[in-house]
Structures are given as C-alpha cells and as structure tokens.
Length: 197
Image (cartoon, rainbow, N blue to C red; front, side, top):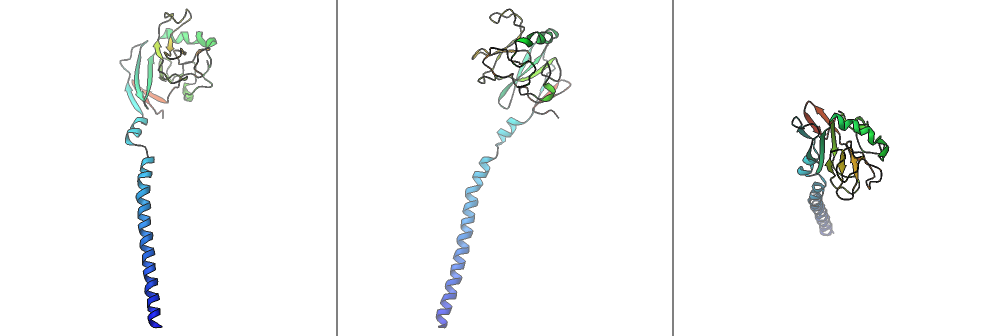
C-alpha cells in the first residue's frame, strides 16, 4: 500500500512539473508570436519622420511666385501673393462653390477671405479635392484657355477643376471642396508646416 502511495505522489509531482513546464513553454511561445505582431502595428521611423513638422525658409520667395515642398508625402504650395492677387479674391466670390470656406478643411485662423494667417502668404496642400491630382499654378489674369474672367489661380490637369488664388473651388468644377490648408506657423521667414502652437 505504501508503495502505491509513493507511486501516486511521484506521478502527481511529475504531472505538476509537466504542467508547469508546458505552461511556461506556452507563455514563451505566445510572447514570441505576439512580439512581431505588436511591433508591426507601431509606425516605422520613416512614417514618424514623414508625419513630423517641417520647416522652410521662404526669404527667397518673390511676390507672385510659388514654391513647393513635401510634407506627409503631399505637395505643399507656398505662394507669396501680390496686392493685385489679393484684390481679385473678392471678385471671384459669386462664382465660387464655398466662398467662405464653411465646408472646407482648414485651421480656424485660416477661415477668412485669404485662407491664411498673413494675407500675402498662402500655404496649402496642393492636391485637388476631386481625385487627388496636383493642380497647376496659373497666376496670370486672363490666361489663355481660362476665360476672360480668370483672375489667377490653379487648374487641375486631370478633370479641369479650377481654384482661385486662395484655393477655393469654382462652381461647375468636379472638385467638391476647397483645397486643404494645413496647420502652420510663421516666425520671420521660417515657415513650419505641421504645427501651429
């Protein structure tokens, strides 16, 4: 009887040891499987860098001209508007789909007739709100092929959406919204895109 009791104790102790070992190995296996999965859900260093704010010195940007930089894999149009360009913005209001930018994507400080912090400086995501093409900069008034009432703006080469020099879309264009204004700040001639605090 005592040998049977000893055998039961040995078997119980072996079972306990096997259960503990199997549980520990299973836990190690779960951690081994989950670690790559969790890491793959985190953004890569390249993705983090792409979403970070960028700075651009705009001291060489002349009046009436545009420069393009890349932020979050999108072109950012930076235009130094002239006084004449600013005067023509109000002329377009009756011909625009959303002249007051009520339905458009822009920070609160850009919800004004100029869609900017500084009337002379337009900072805008250079992507058509129709299908994502990059509209061309057509600053000249009465440019050929754009009509006698053209006061300057942007023309999308894909489907003909037209925008004024504040990125506001004209009625009759396929694009449903004005072009997006990103958050930005300007200190002197240093423009920071992606943050505004």
